[in-house]
Each structure stands twice: as structure tokens, then as C-alpha cells.
Image (cartoon, rainbow, N blue to C red; front, side):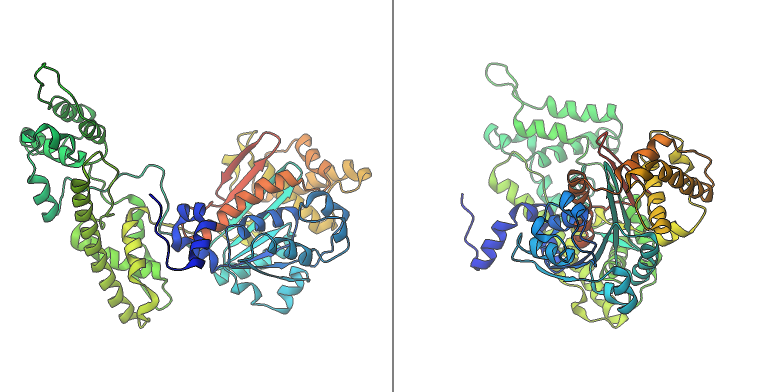
Length: 534
């Protein structure tokens, strides 16, 4: 069946262009992406690869801040640059190349160092949705980190050198409505059906259905019927243990009536009902992470500065206190059934979800009125989406990079106990950044300085570990490996790391999927990666 033609030709072309990603984060996620403003500091190979992966899906606009000129080293690592670019502004050339990838995206550049921009335009970075920094010296990163932390703007810091690299996310508070869990359970409320659903389910006597009707009855109806029979024979209790659930499965399995040849046939819908016993009627309750959100101080003490998320959460809390559970999702899994029966069930769930979302929306509107905020701060469609995914809500509160760099009590001992842990490479790269700050060059950048630089870098790393109260000693081999790179980027490594970082930026922009918290380390030699929370 072909899709109906949309009313707008422009919308049609855009839907076709972004069809695959819209399937991942929906029209509302795409809209957030198209309204976003991204800033990239330093158009390195990693920076341009990262930005490429944001331009292609259609971010609204980007600005590159980079005061460097294109060098021979850039030509060897950056896919977007060629010999004609040598000596030109790296920010300008990268912007022009990236804009060719997607005409929907706007781009601009500032041919000045980030230090100059920060010194002369204090609030420049505040206007962006996300700021991305690559190959940024520690002395510049620390004040930038503090400024963005105070402003509430997410910061993504990346570095790629040789066969290794890392990503570090800084977010003060990030709220997620659609986390897209891998193992979500259908929200069917068979143990506590509302009146309309209960009336419909109890109107069907599965045992007395004729063969044709029986084979087209939704598994949900079958499951409810035999669950009720089980409860009647077990003092009203529901099956909880594996053994008890096997009893219910056996009741469904033995339900078919033998045909004239004495053969029992278990239809597809009955098989579905048996498979659903393990998860379809269990009392999901309110997940622990959602309970914490409902008890969060930001939910209990709203102000005019409270985000729409916390206003909706406060309205949701009142709904839960009144109803004893979260709003129903309002969707059904696919089932083997005739169209009429399935649509009837679907409408019952949809109607209940709509009704509950309206209750939450009215309460959210009342809260906005009390706070003196405009009613358009929260739309009804936003509340419906919020209620539908109420079980998936997550709040992530990160840490400030500057505090991590400045404090001396960073606890890495548990990570460093494993000699093969990739945290060692993060420590080395942290030492590398400090080395650059002290000597204004990469270790090993000059061939005759590799051995002396190994000693210098090892001393810096040793001091870092000492500041963190760690007694571990890094092997010369690992430090030598970094010095041998001489600060060089490999395009293939930067491409992989840039794609990973772009995923995290999209999560931050769309408020979907849980982002990294908060360090990702990649080792291309062994093709391994690891995440750490520092």
C-alpha cells in the first residue's frame, strides 16, 4: 500500500530525505535537531568528522571557532582539506566544505582563537545548544568549562591522537523523556483494568467461542480470561513464581477442544498468549529511577526558572498520588487477531491514555498559572508524549570538567587496579594536555626529542597520579606509544571517534536516548572502548 501524499511538497521531500533518522527520533526529535545551534572549537580532523555527522542529519546551524591556518599535518589527516587549502583559514575552508554536504544547514566561522573569542566576547558561547571542543589546551579548557557549566550549556570535549582518543561530556542537568529502553514491557494493566477495558474483556467467554472466532481472538483477551480462572482457583492470587506461571501456561495450552479426529490444535493467538505470560500482566509498578525523579527537589520546589520537564513532572506526581500509578502508554503490541477485535482493543487503550494525559495537562496548566508562566510554555502534545513515556524518564546530573581538572581527590583507584583498563589511556591523554600547556608542543613532535619527551611526560603523569592519591606507575611502553605519535591524528580513528561523539550530541539535542556519563575512551589498536564516570 502506498503512503498518502502529504499536503506540502516541501514536507514530502524533507520526509524522504530524513526518513531513516525520523524513524529513530520522530518528527519532534528532528524539529529539535533543525532548531539547534552547534559550536565547534578547532576544525581538526576529529572536529570536522564530528560536525559532518551532525550536518548530514540536518542540524539548524553551526559555527566554527578556529584561528589556525591549514598546515601539511592537516592535509595528511583531514579528509575535507586538499593542497589548495594550504595556508588558508582552517575555519573558513572547513565551513565551506561542510556546507556542501547539506543545503538545509547554515554555517559560519570565526577566524580567531577560542582564547581571543572568550576574552573579547564573554557570552559568545551561551547562545549555542551544544559546544564541542577538540584539541583544546588545558589552560583554555578550564575557564571555558566553568563558563559553560554556570551557563547550563552542554560541553563535549574530544581528543584524537594516533590510535587512541577520548570523549568527555559535561552536562549540569540533562532530562530525557524518551530513553528507548532495549527491553521495554507492554503496559497492559490486566491486573488493574479500568472499567471500559474490564467490561470488554469480560464480555468474551473464550471457552465458548466457535473455532473461527477463537482463532481470531486477541492474545490479550485469552490471557485475561485464563488469568481470571487461575485467580478463581488460587484464592485471588496471581502467578508470580516460575512454577505458578507454568500452571497458567498449562491451562492455556490444554484449552483447545479436540476435533473430530481427536487432535488438539493450538492456534497462533493462543501460542502468543502463552509466550506473554512472563511479562504481560506483571505489576510493573513505578520504576525506582522514576520514583527518584518524582521525589527530586526540582519537582517539589518549582520556580519561574523551572524547565517544562519539571513542571510536567510535578503534574505527573499529583496524578500518581491520586491514581496510584503512572499514566498508561496507550499502545498495544502486534497480535494475531481479526481487524475489528484488535482495533477495538487499541481504541480502548488509546482513549484511556488520552483521558489521563488530559488530566496531567490541565494540572500542568494550573501550575504554569501559579508560577506566572505563559500557557504556551507547555503544549498538549508535549504532555501526551511525556505521559506516554513516563516510565522512561531519566535525569542525568554530570560533573564539571574544570572541577575534575583542578581537584586533587579524584578517585581512580578502582579503575587503575586493572592493568589492562583503558582508563590508563585517559590518564596519559590528560598528561599529554598538561605537557602541551607546559612546553607548547606535543611530546615526540620532533624525532630527536622522543626519548627525552617520554621522561618529561612520565613525570607529568606521575605528578597527576600523585595528586589523585594513586600509587600506580605507568609503564614506559604506554607512554612511549603516545610520544611516538608526535601529536598526529589518524583520519580513520578520528572518523570513528567523531561518529561516536556526534551520537552523544544528537542525544543531548533531542533529549532522547541516555547520553554518555561521562568519559568514553577508544583504543584503535585493540578495537576496544570503555566508559567511565569521573
